Length: 310
Image (cartoon, rainbow, N blue to C red; front, top):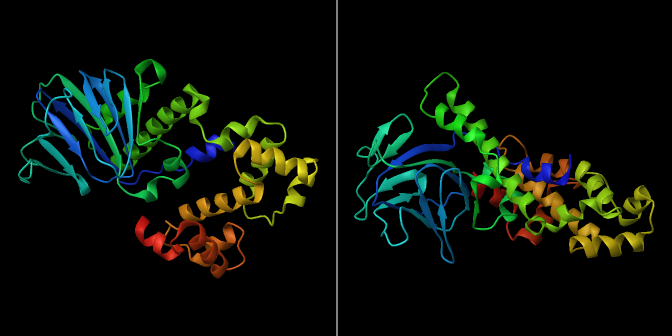
């Protein structure tokens, strides 16, 4: 698995929140749901994404990805004050806190203030960090925008059509479609500007560092040392350390520690896996060894991380 594939291997929606929003101006949604990751595509009309530092106009086919937990606003125009507030758990209220969920329901997974509204948005929200890997979240800005000509949004049409159906297994089908739409958009965003990708991904084509990264990604649990890794690649340990640090921004063994803890963090979201089993999967000899490394680097114990990610 290449490094970008490893990054995008994380999204696993499970009962994700999916909604078609049909809206007539004026409207403004203040999104403060604290969700780890959301994606919104303009199917018809236009919308403005208003963050703390920048504003962006979205037209048909444009997509926005927002990384939580920071709030943001989506509106018909920059000057429209928020009149709809999206709270944690996707509860929708007005400025006084009155529920709008029944008032604005327009059909199966369809919501808004006007069934004939000029703007149609398709929104998908990953409500739990268990669905998205830490590595993916850390690799994205708080908000990113892709224009219609910068990505292949054909799956959005399928998703939009399927959202109005209520067939057997529909939730799982929609979850997988959402994963594919997200992966398509994120992959296009990385491809649009190499500087956006993490350093370790850019280094994948370096003739010495690339093979080293691949070996570590493919067998994170192996008892790696700098000597062993250098011998596998056929270079001196000094050359490997120098080139790896220059390309990735940290020495090979420090990168390996981060990689192991990233994988462990994702595995800990599975309640059926013991901490000892996770430790074994990522190359630590015991649950105690993993816990010590996890707390030293991340500031919380594996158990605390598991509770927070649930």
